Length: 157
Image (cartoon, rainbow, N blue to C red):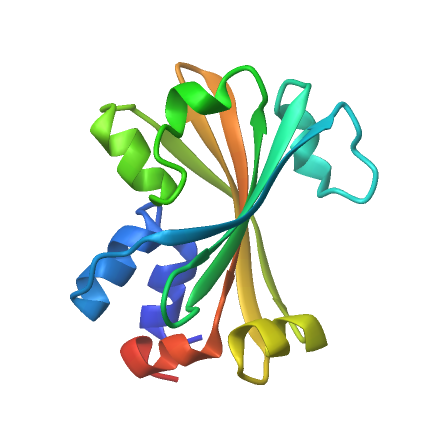
């Protein structure tokens, strides 16, 4: 990986904030789905279990050119306290509330997917990462982000 891709994948900064800086545009999200999934962990990433149930699963893509798509898992009773504006990226909501966080990157992925090729309009490979936001010593949310190869326009190959 090039140094710029390593920064994008391993940085503890906000991806949507980085996108705003790179593109010079306001970054909003399309909330594709937000559903209460209760206590069920079937088929979900292993680290979802650190989020206290019952849980809500939220899926978003960056509006406009799809450069990043993400899924996050939250405690259902707490999500509205942190995500008041669902069309805004998580970092906008959390920074407006001045929420102090620690980001623990738990996994980095690379792979191919026909579904992601359709979603992004590009062939893979696709890079992704998974991380936990910790707040006041407790896991707040687990986030799984997938990056479009179109980011090469900004990051290089």
